[in-house]
Image 1 (cartoon, rainbow, N blue to C red):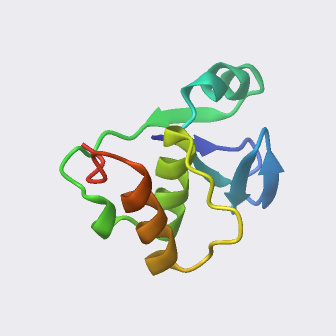
Image 2: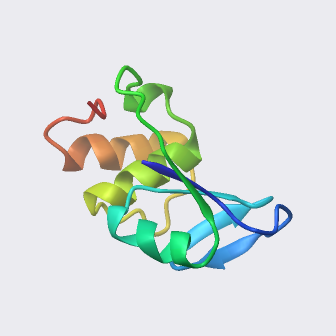
Length: 95
């Protein structure tokens, strides 16, 4: 997972398919890293292999699902997102 920080720390919106709030977005899509770097965003890889999906925030779950190619269209509640992730991945613990 990657934490992307926009050049404008107040930016809220969508860039390259990543949702930003107050200048920060999360994505699981490694192929976007270079694009963000080229456009002067700060990119940090988040490696917390001890964190299970049950302990992730909604934003972290969305980024995790994105990286795994899991479609969460229409899902907003954490329980619904968890159910979809757990039903779609052989290792839903994020390890």
